[in-house]
Image (cartoon, rainbow, N blue to C red; front, top):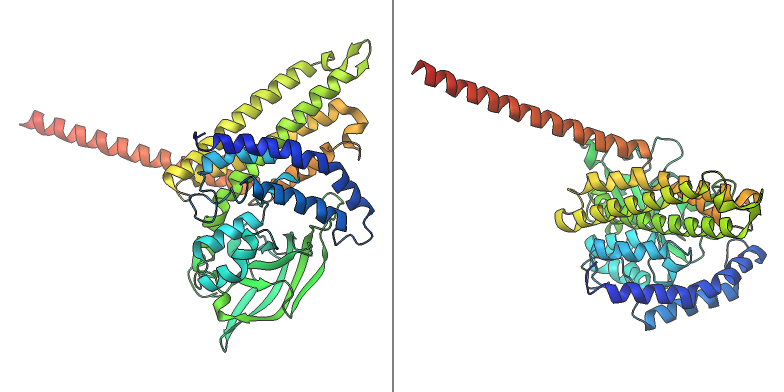
Length: 424
């Protein structure tokens, strides 16, 4: 971590300890008692805005934008350390205006948005005044292959007319969510990676209909929500197009690399939290004449969890460094590695922590079941495990073939030279 970022990391840790942890219990308790599940209790808003104001006053705001005038200008590597701390408390990211999906949406707008788009949407997002959503996944196609996206956008008289359905649109249930970036098919006859575009669609636009929330392990995650949305002849101005028609896949490269780094480092923060809870429980309970921590292989379980956490951390930091040095596109193999590895391994660590807790570990008295559900969901978000394993394996096979071809060519060249020398 750079010397510049170390004081910021310490300040974030202090902010979470002093301004976020103390409000967490009340914030979540109010959510359970709120009469309208799809709104925030006034006291929740007061608590969150108070923590956000303290963060702004401390200069802890918009860390996620790398090398940008609008953010702190941290490298992906420096921000990775901070993201790990944010993962330890589910409210922490929002208090610093570093929550997904806003982070990816803001980075896209900052990088490729027009001045009008920035003034209208980026400015209030950077100020933490509104929230946003990213609408890509569809219920009727295999959306892990983004080429399958079928929601259409047709240009008519200076307006894009959008029709289709999206689901699991995270954050679209939040009453503060005012804008979506929607992945659409605009050029069905173009080459495969030029058919898709991304368009800005306000949540309250005519023709945008929220059909209801999708559940995750039986929970609707209100008021954030993961919504099922129907677009029926939604007409938005031509200038709502981001970066130009047919550039949807290019835009995805802008947002997905950093987003996956952020997800994975927050996940490691959750693994560290789970390990702490595992040890605390193991030391505080006695069964069969021993502390639970000393029963069976629990000490080895703790050891292996710590080893895995440090292994994951090094892999994610290497991916972050690769992005800083090589750029998002060239670092994609490392990013796929962490996305395939981290959520799966963190799930295992949380599962072990639940086991040490006994029945309490899967109850409302412990945060572990919610943490597990979140991590299990991440094995779909930003692409399922299988997609990332395919990317990695394809790269390895190509590297092997290329290396073999070079060796064969070099051998043939050497033999040819040898033959020429003999004949000479």
